[in-house]
Image (cartoon, rainbow, N blue to C red; front, side, top):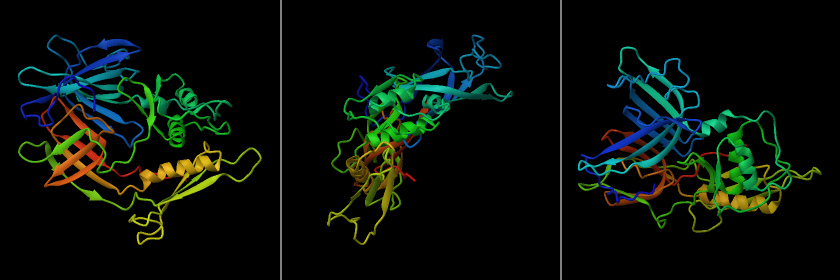
Length: 374
């Protein structure tokens, strides 16, 4: 949850609405501090490289005569020439009390205006777009004694400032690793082998943090959503699936300089009480993972065991519509309770309306990422 000095009830009266302010910046200079937005929404998706997107409807002209149509002016606050939007959103109470929470930075990617309308649509995306655009000119390899942390910072290449969680392990990266031109894929590969995840935070920094732990019924939650007269849940759907479950992980590393066989290791679910144990009625379903970052069988075994924890979690996903809460963020553990049935999972996507009283959409899941190395 985003930090807040106010205690927002998760039962927010319908008379309250989401308030927001939008600024425009370029090269560290603020171009506009109050963009006249009419409506909009922010969409977050923890499964995407670009984890946040924004769509805004902006008045084309305000009563003071200011023109918000960028036209052909590359220096206009809403032009798509490196301009960034900084958005704050919160709940406005009818009595006047409110607090705006930081919802981060967005690179403007485009705008559109129909001549017969008095407004234009502006779109923006996560600053990770800058990393996706800045592909390497050629293949690269890490310096001989680089650690995962120093290589993470090197891959960022000063495009964004970096911040690295102190709980991540400190170990050397494989100097034989070859990075291709796709910078974001290289960050994915580095973090997968590191037991980490990367994202751009609300301050516009490229962050590395430990991978999410699986969510169980005993995991503490930051958000509780309930139905009923005093509840916040508008609609709830439930699904469970086999497709993302695995009961074995095979991790393979990179062969050494002397062409010896590539190291590998296998981790399996063998607990006789597990419904998806290897050799049980569920069957055998291995997940394969390969990384040049793994140089020994011990590295491969540690990674296989780590991946198996999330890959073998009994998967379930629930789309929810609820009363807006701007403090909610990706990765929050949420508990949903309707009709006496409770479920806990992580928030993996959400859509927050701006300047509106409509519901917020959430996806809450305990399913692992649906991906596998070739």
